Image (cartoon, rainbow, N blue to C red):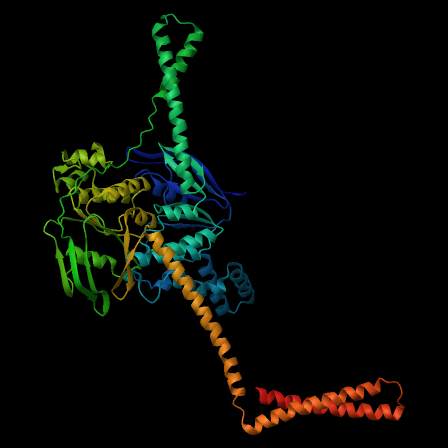
Length: 623
Protein backbone atom coordinates (compact mmCIF):
# COMPACT_ATOMS: atom_id res chain seq x y z
CA UNK A 1 0.00 0.00 0.00
CA UNK A 2 1.44 3.38 -1.07
CA UNK A 3 2.51 5.93 1.52
CA UNK A 4 0.63 9.15 0.77
CA UNK A 5 2.12 11.30 3.55
CA UNK A 6 5.26 11.16 5.68
CA UNK A 7 5.62 13.58 8.57
CA UNK A 8 8.87 13.83 10.53
CA UNK A 9 9.65 15.86 13.65
CA UNK A 10 7.20 18.75 13.28
CA UNK A 11 6.64 21.09 16.24
CA UNK A 12 4.49 24.10 17.08
CA UNK A 13 4.65 26.65 19.88
CA UNK A 14 2.97 29.95 20.62
CA UNK A 15 5.16 32.08 22.88
CA UNK A 16 6.29 29.90 25.77
CA UNK A 17 3.45 27.41 25.19
CA UNK A 18 4.39 24.23 23.32
CA UNK A 19 1.44 22.60 21.54
CA UNK A 20 3.37 19.58 20.26
CA UNK A 21 6.99 18.71 19.71
CA UNK A 22 8.81 16.42 17.24
CA UNK A 23 5.70 14.58 16.06
CA UNK A 24 6.22 11.97 13.32
CA UNK A 25 3.73 9.71 11.56
CA UNK A 26 2.87 8.07 8.24
CA UNK A 27 -0.47 7.94 6.37
CA UNK A 28 -1.09 5.29 3.72
CA UNK A 29 -3.43 5.31 0.75
CA UNK A 30 -7.01 4.57 1.84
CA UNK A 31 -6.54 5.49 5.51
CA UNK A 32 -9.43 7.46 6.99
CA UNK A 33 -8.09 9.00 10.17
CA UNK A 34 -9.61 11.14 12.92
CA UNK A 35 -7.32 13.26 15.12
CA UNK A 36 -8.45 13.45 18.76
CA UNK A 37 -6.98 15.72 21.44
CA UNK A 38 -8.20 18.27 24.01
CA UNK A 39 -8.84 21.86 22.90
CA UNK A 40 -5.74 23.99 22.87
CA UNK A 41 -3.31 21.15 22.12
CA UNK A 42 -2.81 22.16 18.49
CA UNK A 43 -5.13 19.99 16.38
CA UNK A 44 -6.00 22.80 13.95
CA UNK A 45 -2.38 23.98 13.88
CA UNK A 46 -1.23 20.47 12.95
CA UNK A 47 -3.73 20.30 10.07
CA UNK A 48 -2.66 23.74 8.81
CA UNK A 49 0.99 22.67 8.81
CA UNK A 50 0.09 19.61 6.72
CA UNK A 51 -1.96 21.80 4.35
CA UNK A 52 0.92 24.26 3.97
CA UNK A 53 -1.00 27.15 5.55
CA UNK A 54 1.39 27.32 8.53
CA UNK A 55 4.95 26.10 9.01
CA UNK A 56 6.54 23.86 11.61
CA UNK A 57 8.88 25.34 14.23
CA UNK A 58 12.49 24.09 14.26
CA UNK A 59 12.33 22.44 10.84
CA UNK A 60 10.65 19.09 10.42
CA UNK A 61 9.36 17.68 7.15
CA UNK A 62 5.94 17.18 5.56
CA UNK A 63 6.22 15.07 2.41
CA UNK A 64 3.25 14.09 0.25
CA UNK A 65 3.49 11.44 -2.45
CA UNK A 66 4.29 13.03 -5.80
CA UNK A 67 1.37 14.11 -7.99
CA UNK A 68 -1.44 13.43 -5.48
CA UNK A 69 -4.05 16.16 -5.13
CA UNK A 70 -4.63 17.55 -1.63
CA UNK A 71 -7.73 19.51 -0.52
CA UNK A 72 -8.01 21.38 2.80
CA UNK A 73 -11.32 22.31 4.45
CA UNK A 74 -10.63 24.88 7.16
CA UNK A 75 -13.08 25.61 10.00
CA UNK A 76 -13.72 29.03 8.51
CA UNK A 77 -13.08 29.38 4.78
CA UNK A 78 -12.47 32.91 3.49
CA UNK A 79 -14.51 33.88 0.44
CA UNK A 80 -14.72 36.97 -1.77
CA UNK A 81 -17.88 38.57 -0.28
CA UNK A 82 -18.87 40.29 -3.57
CA UNK A 83 -18.65 37.21 -5.80
CA UNK A 84 -21.71 35.22 -6.79
CA UNK A 85 -21.87 31.65 -5.48
CA UNK A 86 -21.24 29.98 -8.84
CA UNK A 87 -18.35 32.30 -9.73
CA UNK A 88 -16.74 31.76 -6.31
CA UNK A 89 -16.86 27.97 -6.65
CA UNK A 90 -15.69 28.13 -10.28
CA UNK A 91 -12.70 30.28 -9.33
CA UNK A 92 -11.52 27.62 -6.85
CA UNK A 93 -11.42 24.76 -9.34
CA UNK A 94 -7.75 25.52 -10.10
CA UNK A 95 -6.58 23.16 -12.87
CA UNK A 96 -10.08 22.48 -14.25
CA UNK A 97 -11.12 26.15 -14.53
CA UNK A 98 -7.64 26.99 -15.86
CA UNK A 99 -8.03 24.30 -18.54
CA UNK A 100 -11.44 25.68 -19.54
CA UNK A 101 -10.03 29.22 -19.73
CA UNK A 102 -7.09 28.10 -21.87
CA UNK A 103 -9.40 26.17 -24.22
CA UNK A 104 -11.64 29.22 -24.72
CA UNK A 105 -8.60 31.41 -25.47
CA UNK A 106 -7.14 28.78 -27.81
CA UNK A 107 -10.39 28.60 -29.81
CA UNK A 108 -10.50 32.39 -30.02
CA UNK A 109 -6.89 32.46 -31.31
CA UNK A 110 -7.58 29.92 -34.07
CA UNK A 111 -4.16 28.30 -33.45
CA UNK A 112 -4.69 24.63 -34.41
CA UNK A 113 -1.78 23.34 -32.34
CA UNK A 114 -2.83 25.33 -29.28
CA UNK A 115 -6.42 24.10 -29.67
CA UNK A 116 -5.23 20.47 -29.81
CA UNK A 117 -3.14 20.91 -26.65
CA UNK A 118 -6.00 22.67 -24.84
CA UNK A 119 -8.42 19.92 -25.92
CA UNK A 120 -6.08 17.27 -24.51
CA UNK A 121 -5.89 19.19 -21.20
CA UNK A 122 -9.69 19.40 -21.09
CA UNK A 123 -9.95 15.65 -21.66
CA UNK A 124 -7.40 14.94 -18.91
CA UNK A 125 -9.25 16.91 -16.21
CA UNK A 126 -12.80 16.43 -17.57
CA UNK A 127 -13.16 20.16 -18.05
CA UNK A 128 -16.13 19.66 -20.38
CA UNK A 129 -18.43 18.80 -17.46
CA UNK A 130 -17.16 21.42 -14.99
CA UNK A 131 -20.22 23.69 -15.02
CA UNK A 132 -22.58 20.69 -14.83
CA UNK A 133 -20.59 19.23 -11.92
CA UNK A 134 -20.72 22.54 -10.00
CA UNK A 135 -24.49 22.78 -10.41
CA UNK A 136 -24.98 19.13 -9.43
CA UNK A 137 -22.85 19.26 -6.24
CA UNK A 138 -24.33 22.57 -5.06
CA UNK A 139 -27.81 21.20 -5.65
CA UNK A 140 -26.95 18.06 -3.62
CA UNK A 141 -25.90 20.36 -0.77
CA UNK A 142 -29.19 22.30 -1.01
CA UNK A 143 -27.56 25.47 -2.36
CA UNK A 144 -29.83 27.21 -4.87
CA UNK A 145 -30.09 30.71 -6.34
CA UNK A 146 -26.46 30.69 -7.42
CA UNK A 147 -26.62 34.37 -8.40
CA UNK A 148 -26.56 35.37 -4.71
CA UNK A 149 -23.39 37.03 -3.41
CA UNK A 150 -21.28 35.23 -0.83
CA UNK A 151 -21.88 38.02 1.73
CA UNK A 152 -25.62 37.19 1.66
CA UNK A 153 -25.14 33.59 2.85
CA UNK A 154 -25.67 32.29 6.39
CA UNK A 155 -22.84 30.52 8.19
CA UNK A 156 -24.31 27.13 7.35
CA UNK A 157 -24.69 28.02 3.65
CA UNK A 158 -21.11 29.31 3.45
CA UNK A 159 -19.90 26.05 5.02
CA UNK A 160 -21.81 24.06 2.39
CA UNK A 161 -20.20 26.11 -0.39
CA UNK A 162 -16.78 25.33 1.12
CA UNK A 163 -17.66 21.61 1.17
CA UNK A 164 -18.77 21.82 -2.48
CA UNK A 165 -15.38 23.31 -3.40
CA UNK A 166 -13.65 20.47 -1.55
CA UNK A 167 -15.75 17.74 -3.24
CA UNK A 168 -15.32 19.23 -6.73
CA UNK A 169 -11.53 19.13 -6.49
CA UNK A 170 -11.67 15.29 -6.68
CA UNK A 171 -8.66 15.25 -4.35
CA UNK A 172 -6.75 12.09 -3.43
CA UNK A 173 -6.08 13.35 0.12
CA UNK A 174 -8.57 15.35 2.20
CA UNK A 175 -7.65 17.39 5.30
CA UNK A 176 -10.83 18.44 7.14
CA UNK A 177 -11.06 20.64 10.25
CA UNK A 178 -14.45 20.25 11.98
CA UNK A 179 -16.35 19.57 8.72
CA UNK A 180 -19.74 19.17 10.45
CA UNK A 181 -19.79 22.55 12.23
CA UNK A 182 -22.77 24.75 11.24
CA UNK A 183 -24.35 22.00 9.08
CA UNK A 184 -27.85 20.65 9.54
CA UNK A 185 -28.18 16.91 10.07
CA UNK A 186 -29.33 16.08 6.51
CA UNK A 187 -26.16 17.62 5.07
CA UNK A 188 -23.99 15.89 7.70
CA UNK A 189 -25.48 12.55 6.65
CA UNK A 190 -24.89 13.43 2.96
CA UNK A 191 -21.22 14.24 3.69
CA UNK A 192 -20.93 11.11 5.83
CA UNK A 193 -22.21 8.93 2.97
CA UNK A 194 -19.89 10.68 0.48
CA UNK A 195 -16.80 10.04 2.62
CA UNK A 196 -17.85 6.44 3.31
CA UNK A 197 -18.04 5.54 -0.39
CA UNK A 198 -15.12 7.75 -1.49
CA UNK A 199 -11.76 6.10 -2.12
CA UNK A 200 -9.94 9.20 -0.88
CA UNK A 201 -7.42 9.22 1.96
CA UNK A 202 -8.61 11.34 4.87
CA UNK A 203 -7.31 13.11 7.98
CA UNK A 204 -9.85 15.11 9.95
CA UNK A 205 -10.62 16.72 13.27
CA UNK A 206 -14.24 16.35 14.38
CA UNK A 207 -16.21 16.27 17.61
CA UNK A 208 -19.15 14.43 15.94
CA UNK A 209 -18.76 10.90 17.31
CA UNK A 210 -21.36 9.24 15.06
CA UNK A 211 -19.71 10.86 12.02
CA UNK A 212 -16.27 9.81 13.24
CA UNK A 213 -17.40 6.26 14.05
CA UNK A 214 -18.98 5.67 10.64
CA UNK A 215 -16.28 7.25 8.46
CA UNK A 216 -12.91 6.54 10.08
CA UNK A 217 -10.84 3.35 10.32
CA UNK A 218 -7.97 4.81 12.36
CA UNK A 219 -7.69 7.22 15.32
CA UNK A 220 -4.69 9.45 16.02
CA UNK A 221 -4.60 10.72 19.62
CA UNK A 222 -2.24 13.37 20.94
CA UNK A 223 -1.61 12.36 24.55
CA UNK A 224 1.01 14.19 26.67
CA UNK A 225 2.74 15.46 23.55
CA UNK A 226 2.95 11.97 22.03
CA UNK A 227 0.96 10.77 19.00
CA UNK A 228 -0.70 7.38 19.60
CA UNK A 229 -2.21 5.36 16.71
CA UNK A 230 -5.31 3.18 17.21
CA UNK A 231 -6.62 1.00 14.39
CA UNK A 232 -10.40 0.86 14.22
CA UNK A 233 -13.31 3.29 14.58
CA UNK A 234 -14.25 5.43 17.57
CA UNK A 235 -15.95 2.62 19.51
CA UNK A 236 -12.84 0.44 19.12
CA UNK A 237 -10.60 3.36 20.05
CA UNK A 238 -12.40 3.77 23.39
CA UNK A 239 -11.86 0.11 24.26
CA UNK A 240 -8.21 0.07 23.14
CA UNK A 241 -7.45 3.34 24.94
CA UNK A 242 -8.83 1.95 28.20
CA UNK A 243 -6.74 -1.21 27.72
CA UNK A 244 -3.64 0.88 27.00
CA UNK A 245 -4.15 2.97 30.14
CA UNK A 246 -4.67 -0.18 32.23
CA UNK A 247 -1.39 -1.62 30.91
CA UNK A 248 0.43 1.66 31.52
CA UNK A 249 -0.94 1.86 35.06
CA UNK A 250 0.15 -1.75 35.74
CA UNK A 251 3.67 -0.92 34.48
CA UNK A 252 3.77 2.21 36.68
CA UNK A 253 2.61 0.22 39.74
CA UNK A 254 5.29 -2.40 39.06
CA UNK A 255 7.94 0.34 38.75
CA UNK A 256 6.83 1.84 42.07
CA UNK A 257 7.15 -1.54 43.84
CA UNK A 258 10.64 -2.01 42.42
CA UNK A 259 11.49 1.56 43.36
CA UNK A 260 10.76 0.89 47.04
CA UNK A 261 13.23 -2.01 47.09
CA UNK A 262 15.87 -0.06 45.18
CA UNK A 263 15.41 2.90 47.50
CA UNK A 264 16.23 0.67 50.47
CA UNK A 265 19.39 -0.49 48.66
CA UNK A 266 20.40 3.10 47.84
CA UNK A 267 20.03 4.15 51.48
CA UNK A 268 21.95 1.11 52.81
CA UNK A 269 24.81 1.19 50.28
CA UNK A 270 28.12 2.72 51.51
CA UNK A 271 29.40 5.92 49.95
CA UNK A 272 32.37 4.12 48.31
CA UNK A 273 30.48 2.23 45.59
CA UNK A 274 31.85 -0.15 42.96
CA UNK A 275 31.47 0.43 39.21
CA UNK A 276 28.78 -2.23 39.10
CA UNK A 277 26.90 -0.39 41.83
CA UNK A 278 27.00 2.84 39.79
CA UNK A 279 25.13 1.11 36.94
CA UNK A 280 22.51 0.13 39.48
CA UNK A 281 22.32 3.72 40.70
CA UNK A 282 21.71 4.97 37.13
CA UNK A 283 19.02 2.32 36.69
CA UNK A 284 17.47 3.52 39.94
CA UNK A 285 17.00 7.03 38.58
CA UNK A 286 15.52 5.68 35.33
CA UNK A 287 13.12 3.61 37.43
CA UNK A 288 12.26 6.67 39.49
CA UNK A 289 11.29 8.57 36.32
CA UNK A 290 9.01 5.73 35.16
CA UNK A 291 7.40 5.40 38.59
CA UNK A 292 6.66 9.13 38.81
CA UNK A 293 4.51 9.17 35.66
CA UNK A 294 0.90 10.17 36.37
CA UNK A 295 -1.93 9.13 34.08
CA UNK A 296 -4.27 11.73 35.50
CA UNK A 297 -6.03 13.63 32.72
CA UNK A 298 -7.32 17.12 33.29
CA UNK A 299 -11.00 17.30 32.39
CA UNK A 300 -13.59 19.99 32.83
CA UNK A 301 -15.41 19.71 36.18
CA UNK A 302 -18.97 21.02 36.04
CA UNK A 303 -19.86 21.49 39.69
CA UNK A 304 -22.65 24.05 39.85
CA UNK A 305 -26.04 24.20 41.50
CA UNK A 306 -29.29 24.98 39.71
CA UNK A 307 -31.81 27.36 41.23
CA UNK A 308 -35.14 26.09 42.57
CA UNK A 309 -37.70 25.75 39.80
CA UNK A 310 -41.43 26.19 40.38
CA UNK A 311 -44.27 24.34 38.66
CA UNK A 312 -44.66 26.88 35.86
CA UNK A 313 -41.76 26.93 33.39
CA UNK A 314 -42.82 28.37 30.01
CA UNK A 315 -46.43 28.19 28.79
CA UNK A 316 -47.04 28.94 25.10
CA UNK A 317 -50.50 29.55 23.66
CA UNK A 318 -51.11 30.00 19.89
CA UNK A 319 -47.69 31.61 19.35
CA UNK A 320 -46.92 32.77 15.79
CA UNK A 321 -44.04 34.67 14.23
CA UNK A 322 -42.99 35.61 10.69
CA UNK A 323 -40.16 37.41 8.93
CA UNK A 324 -42.03 39.22 6.16
CA UNK A 325 -43.92 36.52 4.24
CA UNK A 326 -41.79 33.75 5.73
CA UNK A 327 -43.63 31.87 8.47
CA UNK A 328 -41.27 30.80 11.28
CA UNK A 329 -43.81 29.72 13.92
CA UNK A 330 -47.47 28.92 13.34
CA UNK A 331 -49.94 28.70 16.27
CA UNK A 332 -47.54 26.89 18.59
CA UNK A 333 -48.99 25.81 21.95
CA UNK A 334 -47.07 23.90 24.60
CA UNK A 335 -46.43 23.78 28.35
CA UNK A 336 -42.87 22.95 29.37
CA UNK A 337 -42.47 20.82 32.50
CA UNK A 338 -39.75 20.46 35.12
CA UNK A 339 -37.03 17.96 34.19
CA UNK A 340 -38.09 17.89 30.54
CA UNK A 341 -35.23 17.44 28.03
CA UNK A 342 -36.21 18.53 24.51
CA UNK A 343 -34.03 18.32 21.40
CA UNK A 344 -34.76 20.60 18.44
CA UNK A 345 -33.97 19.49 14.88
CA UNK A 346 -34.76 20.78 11.42
CA UNK A 347 -33.08 22.22 8.34
CA UNK A 348 -31.09 25.44 8.44
CA UNK A 349 -33.43 28.40 8.18
CA UNK A 350 -36.43 26.48 9.54
CA UNK A 351 -36.66 28.85 12.54
CA UNK A 352 -34.93 26.94 15.36
CA UNK A 353 -32.82 29.84 16.65
CA UNK A 354 -35.76 32.22 16.23
CA UNK A 355 -37.85 29.85 18.36
CA UNK A 356 -35.23 29.98 21.14
CA UNK A 357 -35.15 33.79 21.00
CA UNK A 358 -38.95 33.85 21.44
CA UNK A 359 -38.79 31.41 24.38
CA UNK A 360 -36.16 33.56 26.12
CA UNK A 361 -37.94 36.85 25.42
CA UNK A 362 -35.28 38.27 23.11
CA UNK A 363 -37.96 38.43 20.37
CA UNK A 364 -41.66 39.11 20.92
CA UNK A 365 -44.12 36.92 18.98
CA UNK A 366 -46.42 38.46 16.37
CA UNK A 367 -49.38 36.86 18.13
CA UNK A 368 -50.12 34.47 20.96
CA UNK A 369 -48.93 34.39 24.57
CA UNK A 370 -45.63 33.26 26.13
CA UNK A 371 -45.83 33.09 29.96
CA UNK A 372 -42.71 32.40 32.04
CA UNK A 373 -42.70 31.17 35.64
CA UNK A 374 -41.64 33.53 38.43
CA UNK A 375 -38.80 31.24 39.57
CA UNK A 376 -37.53 30.64 36.02
CA UNK A 377 -33.85 31.43 35.55
CA UNK A 378 -32.74 30.76 31.97
CA UNK A 379 -29.16 30.06 30.93
CA UNK A 380 -29.10 30.85 27.20
CA UNK A 381 -26.04 29.56 25.32
CA UNK A 382 -26.26 31.22 21.92
CA UNK A 383 -24.80 29.91 18.69
CA UNK A 384 -22.93 33.18 18.11
CA UNK A 385 -20.72 32.46 21.13
CA UNK A 386 -19.19 34.73 23.71
CA UNK A 387 -19.14 38.53 23.39
CA UNK A 388 -16.30 40.49 24.94
CA UNK A 389 -14.67 43.91 24.91
CA UNK A 390 -11.33 44.65 23.30
CA UNK A 391 -8.56 43.66 25.72
CA UNK A 392 -10.94 41.81 28.08
CA UNK A 393 -9.19 38.99 29.98
CA UNK A 394 -10.40 35.58 31.11
CA UNK A 395 -10.58 36.73 34.75
CA UNK A 396 -12.41 39.97 33.79
CA UNK A 397 -15.03 37.88 32.01
CA UNK A 398 -16.03 35.78 35.02
CA UNK A 399 -15.69 38.51 37.66
CA UNK A 400 -18.15 40.69 35.76
CA UNK A 401 -20.73 37.99 36.53
CA UNK A 402 -19.83 37.03 40.10
CA UNK A 403 -16.92 36.73 42.52
CA UNK A 404 -18.28 33.43 43.85
CA UNK A 405 -20.24 30.50 42.46
CA UNK A 406 -22.62 28.18 44.32
CA UNK A 407 -21.63 24.52 43.78
CA UNK A 408 -23.94 21.52 43.58
CA UNK A 409 -23.43 20.64 47.27
CA UNK A 410 -24.48 24.13 48.39
CA UNK A 411 -21.01 25.51 49.12
CA UNK A 412 -19.62 28.59 47.45
CA UNK A 413 -16.34 28.58 45.56
CA UNK A 414 -14.36 31.50 44.20
CA UNK A 415 -14.57 32.46 40.55
CA UNK A 416 -10.84 31.74 40.18
CA UNK A 417 -11.25 28.18 41.52
CA UNK A 418 -14.19 27.71 39.17
CA UNK A 419 -11.98 28.77 36.28
CA UNK A 420 -9.46 26.03 37.14
CA UNK A 421 -12.30 23.46 37.11
CA UNK A 422 -12.90 24.52 33.48
CA UNK A 423 -9.20 24.02 32.66
CA UNK A 424 -8.17 27.66 32.91
CA UNK A 425 -5.12 27.55 35.23
CA UNK A 426 -3.88 30.73 37.00
CA UNK A 427 -1.38 31.54 34.23
CA UNK A 428 -4.32 32.01 31.81
CA UNK A 429 -6.31 34.41 34.03
CA UNK A 430 -4.78 37.51 32.45
CA UNK A 431 -4.89 36.11 28.94
CA UNK A 432 -7.01 38.11 26.49
CA UNK A 433 -10.20 36.37 25.39
CA UNK A 434 -9.61 37.26 21.73
CA UNK A 435 -6.41 35.14 21.55
CA UNK A 436 -8.03 31.99 22.97
CA UNK A 437 -8.66 29.13 20.57
CA UNK A 438 -12.23 28.62 19.32
CA UNK A 439 -12.68 25.69 21.70
CA UNK A 440 -11.32 27.65 24.69
CA UNK A 441 -13.69 30.54 23.96
CA UNK A 442 -16.63 28.11 23.83
CA UNK A 443 -15.55 26.54 27.12
CA UNK A 444 -15.29 29.98 28.77
CA UNK A 445 -18.72 30.91 27.38
CA UNK A 446 -20.24 27.73 28.83
CA UNK A 447 -18.68 28.58 32.21
CA UNK A 448 -20.27 32.06 32.18
CA UNK A 449 -23.69 30.52 31.46
CA UNK A 450 -23.52 27.87 34.20
CA UNK A 451 -22.11 30.10 36.95
CA UNK A 452 -25.42 31.99 37.02
CA UNK A 453 -27.05 28.83 38.47
CA UNK A 454 -29.80 28.51 35.80
CA UNK A 455 -32.74 26.14 36.28
CA UNK A 456 -33.54 26.00 32.56
CA UNK A 457 -30.77 25.62 30.00
CA UNK A 458 -31.41 26.67 26.41
CA UNK A 459 -28.45 25.63 24.29
CA UNK A 460 -28.08 26.60 20.63
CA UNK A 461 -25.44 24.40 18.95
CA UNK A 462 -23.39 23.89 22.14
CA UNK A 463 -21.10 21.24 20.60
CA UNK A 464 -19.42 23.48 17.99
CA UNK A 465 -15.67 23.72 18.70
CA UNK A 466 -15.83 21.74 21.97
CA UNK A 467 -13.48 18.77 22.15
CA UNK A 468 -14.79 15.26 22.73
CA UNK A 469 -13.49 15.14 26.32
CA UNK A 470 -15.43 18.29 27.26
CA UNK A 471 -18.53 17.00 25.45
CA UNK A 472 -18.45 13.79 27.49
CA UNK A 473 -18.39 15.79 30.73
CA UNK A 474 -21.13 18.16 29.52
CA UNK A 475 -23.33 15.19 28.56
CA UNK A 476 -22.95 13.66 32.01
CA UNK A 477 -23.86 16.98 33.63
CA UNK A 478 -26.95 17.47 31.44
CA UNK A 479 -28.13 13.91 32.13
CA UNK A 480 -28.14 14.74 35.86
CA UNK A 481 -29.46 18.30 35.44
CA UNK A 482 -32.67 18.67 37.48
CA UNK A 483 -34.00 21.65 35.56
CA UNK A 484 -35.41 21.77 32.03
CA UNK A 485 -33.39 21.51 28.82
CA UNK A 486 -34.04 22.89 25.35
CA UNK A 487 -31.24 21.99 22.93
CA UNK A 488 -30.66 22.78 19.26
CA UNK A 489 -27.88 20.58 17.92
CA UNK A 490 -26.68 18.88 14.76
CA UNK A 491 -24.66 16.41 16.87
CA UNK A 492 -26.71 13.21 16.73
CA UNK A 493 -24.71 11.46 19.47
CA UNK A 494 -25.12 14.46 21.79
CA UNK A 495 -28.89 14.56 21.19
CA UNK A 496 -29.22 10.83 21.88
CA UNK A 497 -27.37 11.21 25.18
CA UNK A 498 -29.12 14.32 26.52
CA UNK A 499 -32.72 14.50 25.23
CA UNK A 500 -35.80 12.29 25.55
CA UNK A 501 -38.08 13.81 22.90
CA UNK A 502 -37.81 16.12 19.90
CA UNK A 503 -39.38 19.19 18.39
CA UNK A 504 -39.02 18.59 14.65
CA UNK A 505 -39.26 21.77 12.55
CA UNK A 506 -40.88 20.59 9.32
CA UNK A 507 -41.18 24.00 7.59
CA UNK A 508 -43.72 26.82 7.31
CA UNK A 509 -43.71 27.26 11.08
CA UNK A 510 -44.98 23.77 11.87
CA UNK A 511 -43.46 21.78 14.75
CA UNK A 512 -43.92 18.03 15.22
CA UNK A 513 -43.44 16.59 18.72
CA UNK A 514 -41.70 13.21 18.45
CA UNK A 515 -41.45 11.14 21.63
CA UNK A 516 -38.10 9.34 21.53
CA UNK A 517 -34.42 9.93 20.89
CA UNK A 518 -32.93 11.19 17.65
CA UNK A 519 -31.78 7.74 16.46
CA UNK A 520 -35.33 6.45 16.93
CA UNK A 521 -36.67 9.42 14.95
CA UNK A 522 -34.27 8.71 12.07
CA UNK A 523 -35.31 5.06 12.02
CA UNK A 524 -38.96 6.15 11.99
CA UNK A 525 -38.24 8.51 9.08
CA UNK A 526 -36.41 5.80 7.12
CA UNK A 527 -39.36 3.45 7.53
CA UNK A 528 -41.78 6.20 6.49
CA UNK A 529 -39.68 7.08 3.43
CA UNK A 530 -39.46 3.38 2.49
CA UNK A 531 -43.25 3.15 2.74
CA UNK A 532 -43.61 6.26 0.55
CA UNK A 533 -41.27 4.74 -2.07
CA UNK A 534 -43.26 1.50 -1.94
CA UNK A 535 -46.53 3.38 -2.45
CA UNK A 536 -45.03 5.43 -5.29
CA UNK A 537 -43.82 2.25 -7.02
CA UNK A 538 -47.26 0.68 -6.62
CA UNK A 539 -48.90 3.80 -8.06
CA UNK A 540 -46.49 3.77 -11.02
CA UNK A 541 -47.25 0.09 -11.65
CA UNK A 542 -50.98 0.82 -11.48
CA UNK A 543 -50.65 3.66 -13.99
CA UNK A 544 -48.83 1.29 -16.38
CA UNK A 545 -51.56 -1.37 -16.05
CA UNK A 546 -54.43 1.12 -16.46
CA UNK A 547 -54.25 1.43 -20.30
CA UNK A 548 -54.57 -2.36 -20.59
CA UNK A 549 -57.75 -2.23 -18.50
CA UNK A 550 -59.07 0.52 -20.74
CA UNK A 551 -58.42 -1.61 -23.84
CA UNK A 552 -60.25 -4.54 -22.28
CA UNK A 553 -63.22 -2.31 -21.51
CA UNK A 554 -63.19 -1.02 -25.11
CA UNK A 555 -63.24 -4.61 -26.41
CA UNK A 556 -66.44 -5.26 -24.49
CA UNK A 557 -67.98 -2.12 -26.06
CA UNK A 558 -68.07 -3.40 -29.71
CA UNK A 559 -71.20 -2.55 -31.69
CA UNK A 560 -73.71 -5.29 -32.39
CA UNK A 561 -72.63 -5.47 -36.05
CA UNK A 562 -68.94 -5.66 -35.10
CA UNK A 563 -69.64 -8.33 -32.53
CA UNK A 564 -71.47 -10.44 -35.15
CA UNK A 565 -68.57 -9.90 -37.58
CA UNK A 566 -66.07 -11.00 -34.92
CA UNK A 567 -68.05 -14.16 -34.24
CA UNK A 568 -68.30 -14.92 -38.00
CA UNK A 569 -64.54 -14.43 -38.47
CA UNK A 570 -63.79 -16.84 -35.62
CA UNK A 571 -66.11 -19.44 -37.28
CA UNK A 572 -64.54 -18.86 -40.72
CA UNK A 573 -61.01 -19.21 -39.29
CA UNK A 574 -61.99 -22.55 -37.78
CA UNK A 575 -63.42 -23.77 -41.11
CA UNK A 576 -60.42 -22.54 -43.10
CA UNK A 577 -58.00 -24.20 -40.70
CA UNK A 578 -59.85 -27.53 -41.03
CA UNK A 579 -59.85 -27.26 -44.80
CA UNK A 580 -56.12 -26.47 -44.82
CA UNK A 581 -55.31 -29.50 -42.69
CA UNK A 582 -57.36 -31.78 -45.01
CA UNK A 583 -55.53 -30.53 -48.09
CA UNK A 584 -52.14 -30.91 -46.39
CA UNK A 585 -53.02 -34.55 -45.57
CA UNK A 586 -53.77 -35.16 -49.26
CA UNK A 587 -50.42 -33.69 -50.25
CA UNK A 588 -48.63 -36.07 -47.94
CA UNK A 589 -50.57 -39.19 -49.03
CA UNK A 590 -48.19 -40.04 -51.89
CA UNK A 591 -51.07 -41.09 -54.25
CA UNK A 592 -51.49 -37.82 -56.23
CA UNK A 593 -50.17 -37.05 -59.65
CA UNK A 594 -48.23 -33.94 -60.62
CA UNK A 595 -51.22 -31.89 -61.79
CA UNK A 596 -53.23 -32.73 -58.66
CA UNK A 597 -50.29 -31.79 -56.41
CA UNK A 598 -49.99 -28.43 -58.17
CA UNK A 599 -53.72 -27.64 -57.89
CA UNK A 600 -53.88 -28.54 -54.16
CA UNK A 601 -50.76 -26.44 -53.41
CA UNK A 602 -52.39 -23.42 -55.08
CA UNK A 603 -55.54 -23.92 -52.98
CA UNK A 604 -53.49 -24.06 -49.77
CA UNK A 605 -51.77 -20.75 -50.69
CA UNK A 606 -55.14 -19.03 -51.22
CA UNK A 607 -56.42 -20.41 -47.87
CA UNK A 608 -53.31 -19.07 -46.06
CA UNK A 609 -53.81 -15.61 -47.63
CA UNK A 610 -57.47 -15.62 -46.58
CA UNK A 611 -56.55 -16.73 -43.04
CA UNK A 612 -54.02 -13.84 -42.79
CA UNK A 613 -56.64 -11.28 -43.86
CA UNK A 614 -59.24 -12.58 -41.40
CA UNK A 615 -56.68 -12.73 -38.51
CA UNK A 616 -55.73 -9.07 -39.10
CA UNK A 617 -59.39 -8.06 -38.98
CA UNK A 618 -59.91 -10.18 -35.86
CA UNK A 619 -57.01 -8.34 -34.14
CA UNK A 620 -58.48 -4.95 -35.07
CA UNK A 621 -61.85 -5.87 -33.59
CA UNK A 622 -60.25 -7.44 -30.48
CA UNK A 623 -58.20 -4.32 -29.71
